[in-house]
Image (tube, rainbow, N blue to C red; front, side, top):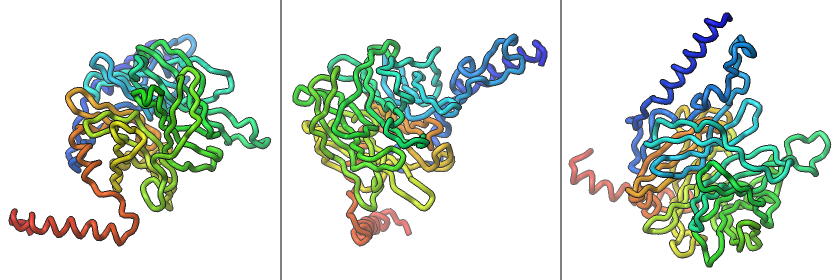
Length: 399
């Protein structure tokens, strides 16, 4: 490729990229369930990452315009609103499998996301950490914005030749602006594995509260017992001594195999609203869905409402990707006008948004029936709904 052809190809790459970033997103007209809206396009994908993160644009060193550092996927973002802009702390996975964090911003929250100039460099706690991912962002009442994320290290006790066994810990860092970060020591708990930890936004009895996921076995094979809860005195030396399960896994439910806390809970007029993920086994592999539950406003570790139905499951092309049939969320926002933005990743590949309101989500969580535990009870629930609807249909003259 001569230099004229090289420069022309570069300009086309930038034109196409700009067109993608400026694309408007619209509500999917084929979807309706009364709880939330889906959108026609993902809000952030690997193609949204800046071209200068991926290509060497110097003709002298890259005359064939090869993509030197490809991006495989962008998913599982934390979310926060700063000065009217929605900021997503995205998990960006390179083609080398290493994940890193990068901030994408938008004024609307449903389109127009653009990455900041450079990825986020979280200070290292030590050199044994191999991978960082899935940051939850919590604006805490102590004045800091905390990033709580998974730190994965190779298990030092793995047998020779076993390159899959990992040890996961909860990393903690804090910031005022998502630019400069202070790294704190990893969270210490009684569990050997710790993923999907979430920091509660407010003090509880003067202490920091963590939703955790106690896990006893190795990541490559293990499952978890449920969503835990514990308190710590000092977040700069975070230790949870008493870790108890507040949202357990349960047989033949959406969270049968494992579950985990999602974003920091949303403070609503009826209590703390959680969007969690539940996992069950299927003949085609694991299936991840999002489900919701509500905790007491004064006792954030006490669940008051737990609908039996999932909130959101992967649909259509969302079911296809690096890890298929997965919906995962660790970022959601309740805005001042009562609107809610739920950012979820599909199949560990791309980021979507679902929009709702505090009123609709609370209606879903409070008034939807709990799982009766048996098929017999599920039929009884549906028969009662049918009987009630027969009268409504008669009044409307519907067949």
